Length: 404
Image (cartoon, rainbow, N blue to C red):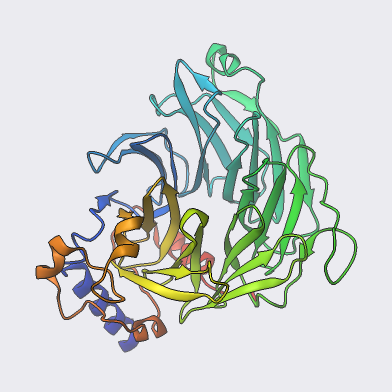
């Protein structure tokens, strides 16, 4: 280990012992790196963990409650099917893994595998589920997006004598030239599926057929897409609002794109790779998470973006951001899922760096004050998990921006 790596490791270990960071955001500790998560109801989340399994989490009790059947590799993504597609009154979750498989299971009984979706030739990187139709989408390191149609009635899953084997009904391949990092549906009608990847491009597909969306304008004709150029490398995340598509990239930017013209309306510059993005249009902000664990809240309603709040709680890469009502949730490679009251964060009057009043007596020298110089260094994970040495290297490669 080099001296720089040792220094980074010592710094991270010090941050993990920081009494303030141990309490900020009321952390739920998963016991392994959290690679992705999805909310399921008011007090439940489904976590994708590096320990080769997905778990359900009780957000009220701040603990993991049940584990799903194990995969043969780290679980990289999870999704939850629509509220009307249930088994025995339970919502249905999906987990995807480096083992190239996707498993379906009841949230209330995670050890029961209802179906196995097989079709990718390399590890699965991301998932999305249609909110009203029994259709699932997956993106992979094999550069493809697969469309999966589940039985019209979820009862067919429960009545099967074993896990139902399901093959994809549509393969989208050839447009992306690198691995697929993220998928998201438009929130208004769920009729368009957006995809991003290591080729730094963004593309759009019909959510039911998989056909490419035709361009409605912009700088060129043909299929709707944003070519490599504005983003220089991996696009890790994407989230859509009614008129804007937000993307997060290893080139240290998050960009808000006008969906009609594909123009970059807003560019949020960071000092580190942006690994997660979440627009919260109800309050006119966009939240970003970066590779060193910092979270930034940007005011975008005025048209000129500005950082209005910083949160320094995670000690490793932020991997996912989600919101429900007035609560923002964040998860990271430090193995914690944290929650933040959005109104409290925005209403905080103690400076740029958010520290709730009840924790201000714990403020320590390690906690940054209105400065982001810490972003310039790289983040090295010290958390012990179930990853093998080979998987550690592969995870590091996935989170890097080597695909220039």
